[in-house]
Amino acid sequence: MKPSGRLKLVSQLLDLPLIDRDGNYCGIVDDVELDGAPGKKTRLAALLVGPGAYSGRMPGWAMRLVRAIGGDRITRVPIGKVESIRSFVQLKDSARKLGLEKTEDKARAWIPRRGAL
Amino acid sequence: MNPLELTLGIMTAVGGFVDISELVFAAKAGSKFGYALIWVFAIATVGIMVFGEMSGRVAAVAKQPVFNLMRHRLGLKLGMLTLLASLIANLITCAAEVGGVAMILNYLTGAPFRLMAVAGALVLMASMWVLPFKWIERTYGLLGLFMIVFAVALVAIHPPWDQIAGGFVPQIPKGLSTKELLIFAYFAVAIVSAVMFPYEAYFYSSGGIEEEWGPKDLPMNTITCTIGFGLGSLLSIAILASSAQLFTPANVDPQLLGSSALEVAIPLGTTGLVIALLGMLFAISGAAVETCMANAYSLSQFFGWEWGRHRKPWEAPRFTIAWVSFFVVALLIILTGIDPMQLVEYAVLFSILVLPLTYLPLLLLAGDRSYMGEYANGRLGDTLGWLYFVLISLAAIGALPLYFLTSGGQA
Image (cartoon, rainbow over all chains, first blue to last red; front, side, top):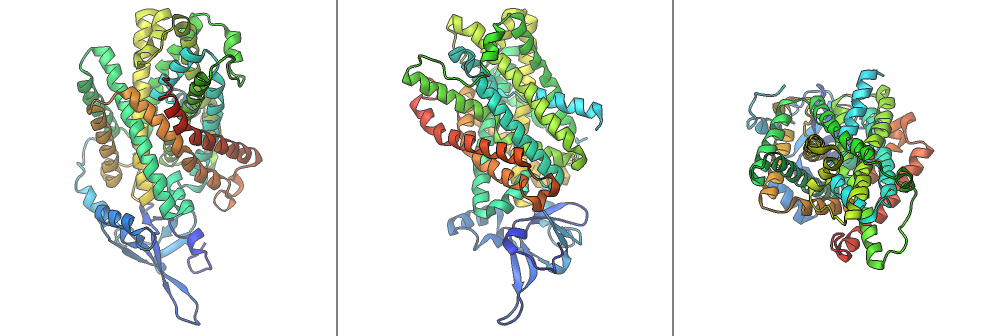
């Protein structure tokens, strides 16, 4: 499915995993940003990724817990960067270029790079 | 289909089937009720075959493991509830398995239990760090084949085969008091839970992605689930039958993990005992690794992190931190001094409560033609799937009352 076509946001997009150009998992569609105005067509503008995008989808107490553990970062992925939508969202660029690797990079600093086959 | 790969896949499934809960509950069930609970093992085994096959098929066709798609189907709130429940269930199970490893190392070496827990956990974590996925799966699965000694021991004691065969027919023993009936029902629920542990589906489907399965691997998936799990389950039934034959007449209640190994020691002597303990050690170690990885898989997939042990640990850093953390917490739980046998009870109880939440999204996904196309569940798959969903839901509803009414099968 092309992102420019008609799609059901909740059943066909929300909560799907994102896979970048190199085949790496790089987040989940946590929320979406819409573009439009009264009397005009509503269009999908961007995918929102990160724990900050949960607000409005979770009870307040749970959101406070999420914020304490995972922060409130949101990364915006413009819809033009989406290649296709299937059982996952295929992105056109690398995760790093889209700013989706920041937390993974922070965690990577803690992992020793030796010993594994 | 590569015959060598297929044989190895089946052998891995056989060797990796049994874990500490099955060992404990099979031995206890045999000593308390003779052969009358064999049919529950058989029915639960068909259940894990059905859901195992579905999870492998979803991984091969949709190219997405269960938890990735679970969040999409259940939504964030219910998905997170399922995630939390399964993380807790798997963590308790992992702690019980680490405790089981420590107990067997204690039997084999005589060294203190806590020291063996630390040593065992460090060796398992080192193996997870060093070995890639396929080697982890194969190493523990194939070494777990030492468990076949339980089947050999059963043959050696010349059991009443007609009575064992009769155990496959659904039955409730006659003449049981109400209290005994409740204990029988508790054991039935516990066996269903132990055979159909939720981590098995998570691990199996994630393994399919790790090994890059595609539709061409579906026949191997079906054969591995049916023959591999089926033969693996026969080992549990052998433990139950030996227990019924040896422990029931002597009025022995096998409360300890080591009691199961005595079933082999009686007919096969010291050599048999050592082989049985080694088989148990590798089988339980494999289950400890699987439960820990299942938790790391679930967490990573739910939040869309990079995951998998086909990658180097630093290539999937949050996944690596997750499995290391889960293993350390499991070890700490054991180091508090809690009895691993008590943890087995909690693991079985908590897992059955989670089972319906785990298997419902899988059932929906496997039957969804928009994801699965021509590989979606057929009529047989759907019927069996929903039948088992009703069964595990009933077991989940009955689990807590039965646990309290029977004091965990002790009353």
